[in-house]
Length: 284
Image 1 (cartoon, rainbow, N blue to C red):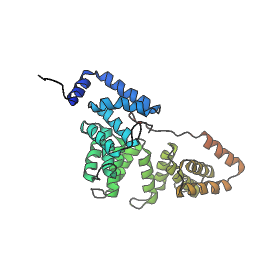
Image 2: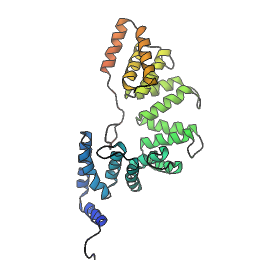
Image 3: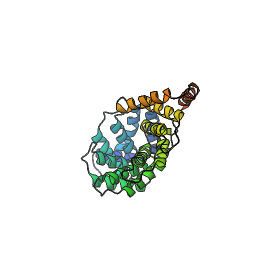
Image 4: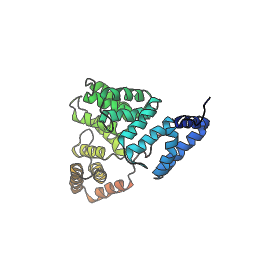
């Protein structure tokens, strides 16, 4: 029997246990709804009490808020702290997020072994970002021997789940042909999947292949379209300058009717997202 006041931590646990699972789910759902409406302050207000009470889903989402600076000051270290709590409870997305932080050193001391352990757990649960992270580990030899067979396997698993980063990584590997046999058809295929999802760097890569007829037939309309979309989406810098040059070059070789057709396709373009996260503050 307790005498006097209960410890605050115990009160939080008892409060959570007294709340029906449906009520906790409603709180998370309300927080997600607020976040997707741009009201991050309200989202944090929904996530925090549940996270402090031990709800792994809310802990992961509160960690995302700190990671992205949404509704709270950006703090990679606080994000890692919340991810760690959720990861310990078996939340695969938190394991993936924390594993990635240990891989990059964002908010934590880099630790390739810890990253590998967390990402392996999350990948086993099907998390696509964890699979991509394992691909990076094996391609770069971070805490493991370089193994391109394993790297390609993990990248492909993530790419098949619609992760544009993995699709782009595969395209670059096959285009370069330095660590695996060069395969421009595969490169074009993976560039296209990422480009269709609206990934500007993949759009640039695909435009270049159409310009030179590598892995695809030369096609001025397709080349102009993808250079144009890349130029609109890339941030300022060398890549955007190159995309604009490609756009101007292909335009100069297109007949007026074909240029008009290309511009019509550009105006009608809408990213075709292959996969949306079930738990995310913003889209894929």
